[in-house]
Length: 293
Image (cartoon, rainbow, N blue to C red; front, side, top):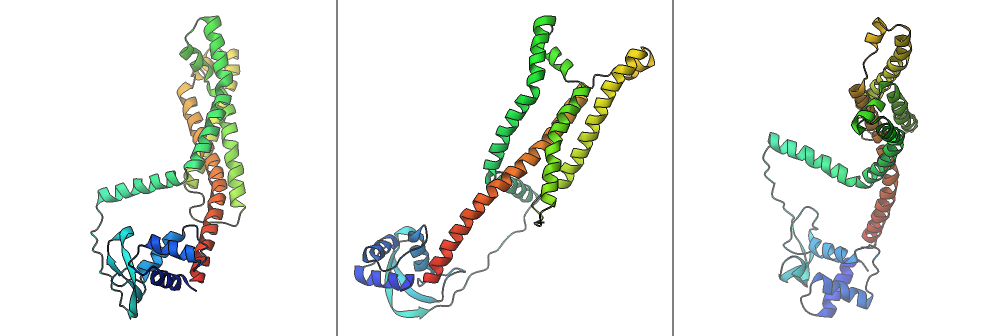
């Protein structure tokens, strides 16, 4: 017995116009059909609408077994037709206006927000990892700055700025950028080459190279410059006198973006496997219900 047959029998047993919930309950009470879907009530409602006289939509069937006597939506009351009616399904064309520039901009941001919302779990995990990583990276600088304030009687901002020097930046950038190269090699070695697998990878790779070279240059400038300036207090001291504070922050923030991209894409892949398994289970359940009727 198919779902449609079970609905027919249920309506005959009830003997009066009934809602889809009443029909479903009759099927369950009489054990007319064994559902495999997670939401069997929706299956009953869909089957009723597909085979109801007067309801025309793209997925509607031409074979009509039921009709609505009164009510709309969830409150619609269904009865069996005396004879099967074959109805031509006609769908009126939908008139659409060409999108304006504002519509395109709104749609762009809407799609971006939808993608962020769909991967909010991966962003949440990555942000937690980022907070702990930043805490570990800046802890020595913060502690040293506190001791400078205590011992040298300078302001905390001044002590912190003194610690953010070009020479130390490369130590941070190398640690932040290294996971990106591991992530890149791991993904390029797989056979999955979907277009959306690594979005913005070209920009991130360019930012990685620039940050790496800039950090290396800052390290050489500060360390080597300090040695040369100590030997010759004239010209060398003038050349290597810059503190590179703002430049150091720029390099560090760029490296942080590279790190976040690598961590987020890895966490996104892990979450995707779970969603795929759930989606496959739901799809298999729906296909099983369709085969049953």
